[in-house]
Amino acid sequence: MPRTLAPLAVLVAIALAGCVQTPPERMHLPRPTPTAAFANEEEALAAAVEAYARYVQIADQIAQDGGHAAERMEEVATGDFLSTSIEGLTSWTERGLHQIGSRSFHDVVVQQAAFTDGEVLVYLCDDVSRTDVVDQFGVSHVASDRPASNYFQVQFQTGRDGVLRVSSRLRWDERSC
Image (tube, rainbow, N blue to C red; front, side):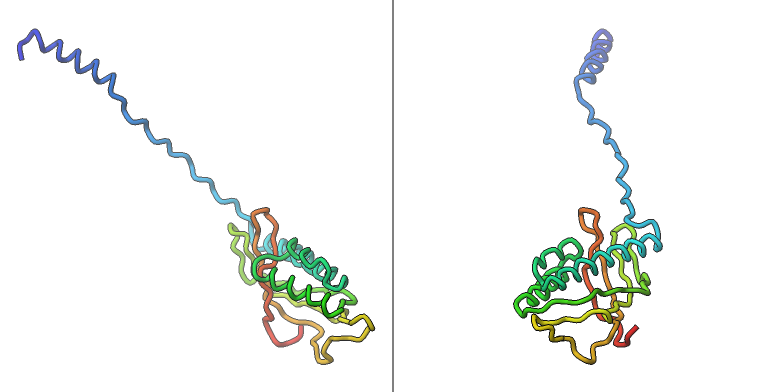
């Protein structure tokens, strides 16, 4: 290349370099840190106790109403457990049954808690000693050998709305508590 063209070639290269668009640097945004539904086991226990108390209150009210408006269980239950609960309570209406009295519960112990997922599994004692299920004539439909209390394993899930609901309730132990 002649010496007179060399400076011109450098100028053209510099000019063209300004025309070529370099890809923008990727911005690395920080990933959102999942917010824990519970900070610790103590908070998980408190949330589970509150959610189960609400569950007992709604379930007892529906049972005392003879199973009417069983869809109110949507406030406190979810998934297959919700469907099963609604079906069971609706059958009370068809059979003319209703509950007298209210349940209580105690001895709640966290078995497992997924803090970021908002899932909690507890063991508890569900006390039905102050309840009866009767028909329109006041005749009890409770088996005479029904235990006054039962151990249950209860699982809770936090919904998209942030509400903790019962997703499973299984008899944990055959003993009364």
